[in-house]
Amino acid sequence: MEKERIKEFAGKVMSDLSGGMAAGLAYVGAQTGLFQTLSGQGPMSMEHIIEKSGLQPRYVEEWLKGMVCAEYLQYDMDNETFELPDELGFLLASEGTDHYMGGLLHSLPMMLSVAPRVSDAFINGGGVPFEDYGQDGILAIDLMNRGLYEQRFVSYWLKSMPTVYEKLTAGGRVLDFGCGTGHAALTMAGAFAKSQFIGLDIDPASIEQACKNARDAGLTDNLNFVQGTFSDLEPGQQFDLITTCDCIHDLTDPVGVLKKLCELLSSDGTLFIIEPKVADSLTENINPIGALYYGMSVFHCMTQSLAAGGPGLGTCLGPSGMQSLVKQAGFNSFEVLELKSQMTLFYAVRH
Image (tube, rainbow, N blue to C red; front, top):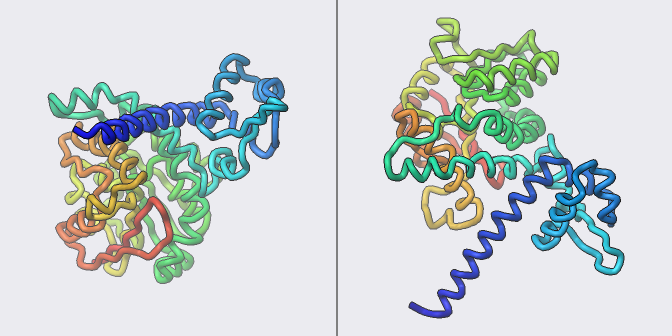
Protein backbone atom coordinates (compact mmCIF):
# COMPACT_ATOMS: atom_id res chain seq x y z
CA MET A 1 0.00 0.00 0.00
CA GLU A 2 1.08 3.56 -0.70
CA LYS A 3 1.33 5.82 2.35
CA GLU A 4 0.28 8.89 0.40
CA ARG A 5 -2.88 7.18 -0.83
CA ILE A 6 -3.69 6.12 2.72
CA LYS A 7 -3.41 9.76 3.78
CA GLU A 8 -5.59 10.85 0.86
CA PHE A 9 -8.31 8.33 1.68
CA ALA A 10 -8.13 9.14 5.38
CA GLY A 11 -8.71 12.75 4.42
CA LYS A 12 -11.63 11.79 2.21
CA VAL A 13 -13.27 9.70 4.95
CA MET A 14 -12.83 12.56 7.41
CA SER A 15 -14.26 15.01 4.88
CA ASP A 16 -17.29 12.77 4.30
CA LEU A 17 -17.86 12.38 8.04
CA SER A 18 -17.58 16.13 8.47
CA GLY A 19 -20.02 16.64 5.60
CA GLY A 20 -22.47 14.26 7.24
CA MET A 21 -22.35 16.25 10.48
CA ALA A 22 -22.65 19.52 8.56
CA ALA A 23 -25.74 18.19 6.79
CA GLY A 24 -27.19 17.18 10.14
CA LEU A 25 -26.62 20.66 11.54
CA ALA A 26 -28.07 22.19 8.39
CA TYR A 27 -31.16 19.99 8.79
CA VAL A 28 -31.60 21.41 12.30
CA GLY A 29 -31.25 24.91 10.88
CA ALA A 30 -33.98 24.26 8.33
CA GLN A 31 -36.23 22.40 10.77
CA THR A 32 -36.07 24.98 13.56
CA GLY A 33 -36.19 28.07 11.35
CA LEU A 34 -32.68 29.24 12.21
CA PHE A 35 -31.86 29.83 8.55
CA GLN A 36 -35.00 31.94 8.29
CA THR A 37 -33.94 33.86 11.39
CA LEU A 38 -30.59 34.69 9.81
CA SER A 39 -31.77 35.21 6.22
CA GLY A 40 -31.38 38.76 4.93
CA GLN A 41 -30.34 40.13 8.32
CA GLY A 42 -26.65 40.73 7.70
CA PRO A 43 -24.26 40.30 10.64
CA MET A 44 -26.04 39.36 13.89
CA SER A 45 -24.77 38.86 17.42
CA MET A 46 -25.36 35.53 19.09
CA GLU A 47 -27.65 37.19 21.62
CA HIS A 48 -29.76 38.73 18.86
CA ILE A 49 -30.06 35.37 17.06
CA ILE A 50 -31.09 33.61 20.26
CA GLU A 51 -33.66 36.28 21.06
CA LYS A 52 -35.12 36.39 17.56
CA SER A 53 -35.25 32.61 17.16
CA GLY A 54 -36.78 31.94 20.56
CA LEU A 55 -34.71 28.76 20.82
CA GLN A 56 -32.60 27.33 23.62
CA PRO A 57 -29.43 29.46 24.00
CA ARG A 58 -26.91 26.67 24.51
CA TYR A 59 -28.11 24.73 21.47
CA VAL A 60 -28.11 27.84 19.30
CA GLU A 61 -24.58 28.71 20.41
CA GLU A 62 -23.20 25.31 19.49
CA TRP A 63 -25.10 25.24 16.21
CA LEU A 64 -23.75 28.64 15.18
CA LYS A 65 -20.18 27.62 15.90
CA GLY A 66 -20.61 24.35 14.04
CA MET A 67 -22.07 26.10 11.01
CA VAL A 68 -19.14 28.51 10.98
CA CYS A 69 -16.71 25.58 10.97
CA ALA A 70 -18.73 23.95 8.17
CA GLU A 71 -18.53 27.25 6.24
CA TYR A 72 -22.29 27.73 6.11
CA LEU A 73 -22.05 30.93 8.18
CA GLN A 74 -19.55 33.77 8.10
CA TYR A 75 -18.05 34.88 11.40
CA ASP A 76 -16.63 38.31 12.21
CA MET A 77 -14.13 37.73 15.02
CA ASP A 78 -13.74 41.41 15.90
CA ASN A 79 -17.48 42.07 16.28
CA GLU A 80 -18.43 38.50 17.25
CA THR A 81 -21.22 38.39 14.70
CA PHE A 82 -22.63 35.63 12.51
CA GLU A 83 -23.97 36.06 9.00
CA LEU A 84 -25.82 33.82 6.56
CA PRO A 85 -24.63 34.60 3.00
CA ASP A 86 -27.52 35.69 0.80
CA GLU A 87 -26.67 32.98 -1.71
CA LEU A 88 -27.04 30.27 0.94
CA GLY A 89 -30.24 31.84 2.23
CA PHE A 90 -31.53 31.62 -1.35
CA LEU A 91 -31.15 27.84 -1.11
CA LEU A 92 -31.98 27.09 2.52
CA ALA A 93 -34.38 29.83 3.66
CA SER A 94 -36.71 29.66 0.68
CA GLU A 95 -39.26 26.92 1.35
CA GLY A 96 -41.88 26.71 -1.39
CA THR A 97 -39.58 27.89 -4.18
CA ASP A 98 -38.14 25.81 -7.01
CA HIS A 99 -34.62 26.33 -5.66
CA TYR A 100 -35.19 25.24 -2.04
CA MET A 101 -32.71 22.55 -0.94
CA GLY A 102 -34.06 22.08 2.57
CA GLY A 103 -36.14 19.11 1.46
CA LEU A 104 -32.96 17.19 0.69
CA LEU A 105 -31.73 17.98 4.19
CA HIS A 106 -34.99 16.66 5.66
CA SER A 107 -34.55 13.42 3.75
CA LEU A 108 -31.23 12.54 5.39
CA PRO A 109 -32.39 11.85 8.98
CA MET A 110 -35.42 10.01 7.64
CA MET A 111 -33.29 7.71 5.50
CA LEU A 112 -30.33 7.24 7.81
CA SER A 113 -32.62 6.40 10.73
CA VAL A 114 -33.29 3.04 9.05
CA ALA A 115 -29.59 2.30 8.39
CA PRO A 116 -29.45 -0.54 10.97
CA ARG A 117 -32.48 -2.20 9.36
CA VAL A 118 -31.02 -1.80 5.88
CA SER A 119 -27.75 -3.32 7.08
CA ASP A 120 -29.73 -6.30 8.39
CA ALA A 121 -31.43 -6.60 4.97
CA PHE A 122 -27.99 -6.95 3.35
CA ILE A 123 -27.62 -10.17 5.37
CA ASN A 124 -31.16 -11.51 5.61
CA GLY A 125 -32.94 -9.95 2.62
CA GLY A 126 -36.15 -7.95 2.68
CA GLY A 127 -36.06 -4.23 3.37
CA VAL A 128 -37.85 -1.28 4.92
CA PRO A 129 -41.49 -0.73 3.78
CA PHE A 130 -42.54 2.76 2.72
CA GLU A 131 -45.03 3.12 5.57
CA ASP A 132 -42.27 2.57 8.13
CA TYR A 133 -40.75 5.95 7.24
CA GLY A 134 -43.88 7.52 8.71
CA GLN A 135 -44.75 11.20 8.63
CA ASP A 136 -41.08 12.18 8.41
CA GLY A 137 -40.85 10.37 5.10
CA ILE A 138 -43.99 12.01 3.74
CA LEU A 139 -42.81 15.46 4.85
CA ALA A 140 -39.34 15.05 3.35
CA ILE A 141 -40.72 14.00 -0.05
CA ASP A 142 -43.22 16.86 0.09
CA LEU A 143 -40.52 19.44 0.86
CA MET A 144 -38.22 18.11 -1.88
CA ASN A 145 -40.88 18.39 -4.59
CA ARG A 146 -43.53 20.95 -3.64
CA GLY A 147 -41.78 24.09 -4.84
CA LEU A 148 -40.68 22.47 -8.10
CA TYR A 149 -44.20 21.31 -8.88
CA GLU A 150 -45.79 24.63 -8.01
CA GLN A 151 -43.25 26.72 -9.92
CA ARG A 152 -42.34 24.56 -12.92
CA PHE A 153 -44.82 21.74 -13.55
CA VAL A 154 -47.28 23.72 -15.67
CA SER A 155 -45.34 26.80 -16.75
CA TYR A 156 -42.26 24.92 -17.97
CA TRP A 157 -42.61 21.13 -18.00
CA LEU A 158 -46.09 20.78 -19.51
CA LYS A 159 -45.55 23.73 -21.83
CA SER A 160 -42.72 21.74 -23.41
CA MET A 161 -45.49 19.48 -24.79
CA PRO A 162 -47.74 21.97 -26.65
CA THR A 163 -50.35 19.39 -27.71
CA VAL A 164 -50.78 18.24 -24.10
CA TYR A 165 -50.96 21.82 -22.84
CA GLU A 166 -53.59 22.76 -25.42
CA LYS A 167 -55.67 19.67 -24.59
CA LEU A 168 -55.71 20.48 -20.88
CA THR A 169 -56.56 24.11 -21.57
CA ALA A 170 -59.56 23.04 -23.64
CA GLY A 171 -60.57 20.35 -21.16
CA GLY A 172 -59.09 16.90 -20.69
CA ARG A 173 -58.83 14.05 -18.21
CA VAL A 174 -55.67 13.54 -16.16
CA LEU A 175 -54.48 10.79 -13.81
CA ASP A 176 -51.57 11.48 -11.46
CA PHE A 177 -50.38 8.00 -10.49
CA GLY A 178 -48.42 7.79 -7.22
CA CYS A 179 -49.59 11.29 -6.38
CA GLY A 180 -48.28 11.39 -2.80
CA THR A 181 -49.47 14.53 -1.03
CA GLY A 182 -50.90 15.82 -4.29
CA HIS A 183 -48.93 18.91 -5.23
CA ALA A 184 -48.47 17.99 -8.89
CA ALA A 185 -52.20 17.35 -9.29
CA LEU A 186 -53.05 20.46 -7.29
CA THR A 187 -50.86 22.63 -9.49
CA MET A 188 -52.41 21.25 -12.67
CA ALA A 189 -55.97 21.50 -11.33
CA GLY A 190 -55.39 25.14 -10.44
CA ALA A 191 -54.03 25.93 -13.89
CA PHE A 192 -56.55 24.02 -16.02
CA ALA A 193 -60.05 24.70 -14.70
CA LYS A 194 -61.74 22.93 -17.63
CA SER A 195 -59.90 19.65 -17.06
CA GLN A 196 -60.65 16.89 -14.57
CA PHE A 197 -57.92 15.40 -12.37
CA ILE A 198 -57.57 12.26 -10.28
CA GLY A 199 -54.67 11.59 -7.93
CA LEU A 200 -54.10 7.93 -7.05
CA ASP A 201 -51.80 6.60 -4.32
CA ILE A 202 -51.74 3.47 -2.21
CA ASP A 203 -50.50 5.23 0.94
CA PRO A 204 -53.38 6.33 3.23
CA ALA A 205 -51.41 9.02 5.08
CA SER A 206 -50.29 10.66 1.84
CA ILE A 207 -53.83 10.72 0.44
CA GLU A 208 -55.18 12.12 3.69
CA GLN A 209 -52.73 15.01 3.41
CA ALA A 210 -53.51 15.44 -0.30
CA CYS A 211 -57.24 15.76 0.42
CA LYS A 212 -56.51 18.37 3.08
CA ASN A 213 -54.28 20.27 0.66
CA ALA A 214 -57.07 20.27 -1.93
CA ARG A 215 -59.61 21.58 0.57
CA ASP A 216 -57.23 24.28 1.75
CA ALA A 217 -56.61 25.35 -1.85
CA GLY A 218 -60.31 25.28 -2.74
CA LEU A 219 -59.66 22.79 -5.54
CA THR A 220 -62.28 20.10 -5.03
CA ASP A 221 -64.49 20.73 -8.07
CA ASN A 222 -62.10 19.35 -10.69
CA LEU A 223 -59.79 17.28 -8.48
CA ASN A 224 -60.36 14.03 -6.63
CA PHE A 225 -57.85 11.95 -4.68
CA VAL A 226 -58.25 8.17 -4.44
CA GLN A 227 -56.46 5.97 -1.93
CA GLY A 228 -55.87 2.49 -3.32
CA THR A 229 -54.98 0.71 -6.56
CA PHE A 230 -56.26 0.75 -10.13
CA SER A 231 -59.25 -1.34 -9.06
CA ASP A 232 -60.43 1.60 -6.96
CA LEU A 233 -60.85 3.80 -10.03
CA GLU A 234 -64.18 3.93 -11.83
CA PRO A 235 -64.15 1.33 -14.63
CA GLY A 236 -63.91 2.35 -18.26
CA GLN A 237 -62.02 5.60 -17.72
CA GLN A 238 -59.52 6.89 -20.26
CA PHE A 239 -57.04 9.70 -19.67
CA ASP A 240 -55.49 12.24 -22.03
CA LEU A 241 -52.51 12.67 -19.72
CA ILE A 242 -51.09 10.36 -17.08
CA THR A 243 -48.29 11.63 -14.86
CA THR A 244 -45.96 9.58 -12.67
CA CYS A 245 -43.62 11.69 -10.59
CA ASP A 246 -40.51 10.07 -9.17
CA CYS A 247 -42.14 6.72 -8.43
CA ILE A 248 -41.70 4.15 -11.24
CA HIS A 249 -38.32 3.05 -9.86
CA ASP A 250 -39.94 2.45 -6.43
CA LEU A 251 -42.63 0.05 -7.62
CA THR A 252 -42.99 -3.63 -6.77
CA ASP A 253 -44.37 -4.40 -10.24
CA PRO A 254 -43.19 -1.62 -12.57
CA VAL A 255 -43.99 -3.41 -15.84
CA GLY A 256 -47.42 -4.46 -14.58
CA VAL A 257 -48.20 -0.88 -13.52
CA LEU A 258 -47.01 0.51 -16.85
CA LYS A 259 -49.17 -2.02 -18.71
CA LYS A 260 -52.20 -0.80 -16.77
CA LEU A 261 -51.28 2.82 -17.46
CA CYS A 262 -51.01 1.90 -21.14
CA GLU A 263 -54.58 0.58 -21.00
CA LEU A 264 -55.84 3.72 -19.24
CA LEU A 265 -54.14 6.12 -21.66
CA SER A 266 -56.28 7.35 -24.55
CA SER A 267 -55.10 6.51 -28.07
CA ASP A 268 -53.61 9.99 -28.54
CA GLY A 269 -52.66 10.53 -24.90
CA THR A 270 -49.28 11.05 -23.23
CA LEU A 271 -47.66 9.38 -20.25
CA PHE A 272 -45.39 11.97 -18.61
CA ILE A 273 -42.73 10.33 -16.46
CA ILE A 274 -40.44 12.20 -14.06
CA GLU A 275 -37.42 10.32 -12.68
CA PRO A 276 -34.05 11.07 -11.03
CA LYS A 277 -31.39 12.29 -13.46
CA VAL A 278 -28.68 9.68 -13.81
CA ALA A 279 -26.72 8.35 -16.76
CA ASP A 280 -26.82 4.76 -17.97
CA SER A 281 -23.06 4.39 -17.47
CA LEU A 282 -21.80 4.08 -13.90
CA THR A 283 -18.65 6.04 -14.72
CA GLU A 284 -20.78 9.02 -15.83
CA ASN A 285 -22.43 9.02 -12.40
CA ILE A 286 -19.21 9.46 -10.45
CA ASN A 287 -20.18 12.84 -9.04
CA PRO A 288 -21.97 14.20 -5.94
CA ILE A 289 -25.46 13.71 -7.41
CA GLY A 290 -24.69 10.13 -8.37
CA ALA A 291 -23.39 9.39 -4.89
CA LEU A 292 -26.46 11.05 -3.35
CA TYR A 293 -28.86 9.05 -5.50
CA TYR A 294 -27.19 5.70 -4.83
CA GLY A 295 -27.40 6.47 -1.11
CA MET A 296 -31.08 7.35 -1.47
CA SER A 297 -31.58 4.12 -3.36
CA VAL A 298 -30.10 1.92 -0.64
CA PHE A 299 -31.79 3.72 2.25
CA HIS A 300 -35.18 4.40 0.64
CA CYS A 301 -36.10 3.63 -2.96
CA MET A 302 -34.59 0.19 -3.51
CA THR A 303 -35.22 -1.12 -0.01
CA GLN A 304 -38.94 -0.30 0.02
CA SER A 305 -39.43 -2.18 -3.24
CA LEU A 306 -37.47 -5.20 -1.99
CA ALA A 307 -39.42 -5.12 1.28
CA ALA A 308 -42.61 -5.76 -0.69
CA GLY A 309 -41.10 -8.46 -2.90
CA GLY A 310 -40.40 -6.11 -5.81
CA PRO A 311 -37.37 -6.00 -8.13
CA GLY A 312 -35.66 -3.14 -6.28
CA LEU A 313 -34.89 -1.13 -9.42
CA GLY A 314 -33.51 1.69 -7.31
CA THR A 315 -33.12 5.41 -7.78
CA CYS A 316 -30.52 5.16 -10.54
CA LEU A 317 -32.62 3.40 -13.19
CA GLY A 318 -31.46 5.67 -16.02
CA PRO A 319 -32.95 6.32 -19.49
CA SER A 320 -32.17 2.89 -20.98
CA GLY A 321 -33.73 1.11 -18.02
CA MET A 322 -36.86 3.25 -18.26
CA GLN A 323 -37.12 2.74 -22.02
CA SER A 324 -36.89 -1.02 -21.55
CA LEU A 325 -39.74 -0.96 -19.01
CA VAL A 326 -42.12 1.07 -21.18
CA LYS A 327 -41.41 -1.10 -24.23
CA GLN A 328 -42.18 -4.24 -22.20
CA ALA A 329 -45.43 -2.59 -21.14
CA GLY A 330 -46.58 -2.14 -24.74
CA PHE A 331 -45.70 1.48 -25.47
CA ASN A 332 -44.07 2.23 -28.82
CA SER A 333 -42.97 5.87 -28.45
CA PHE A 334 -40.35 6.91 -25.89
CA GLU A 335 -38.91 10.42 -25.83
CA VAL A 336 -36.43 12.03 -23.45
CA LEU A 337 -37.59 15.63 -23.14
CA GLU A 338 -34.97 18.37 -23.36
CA LEU A 339 -35.86 20.16 -20.13
CA LYS A 340 -33.21 21.87 -18.04
CA SER A 341 -32.69 20.28 -14.63
CA GLN A 342 -29.66 19.23 -12.63
CA MET A 343 -31.41 16.40 -10.85
CA THR A 344 -34.43 15.29 -12.90
CA LEU A 345 -35.14 13.49 -16.18
CA PHE A 346 -38.40 13.82 -18.10
CA TYR A 347 -39.94 11.32 -20.49
CA ALA A 348 -42.93 11.53 -22.84
CA VAL A 349 -44.32 8.08 -23.62
CA ARG A 350 -47.08 7.31 -26.11
CA HIS A 351 -48.82 4.37 -27.79
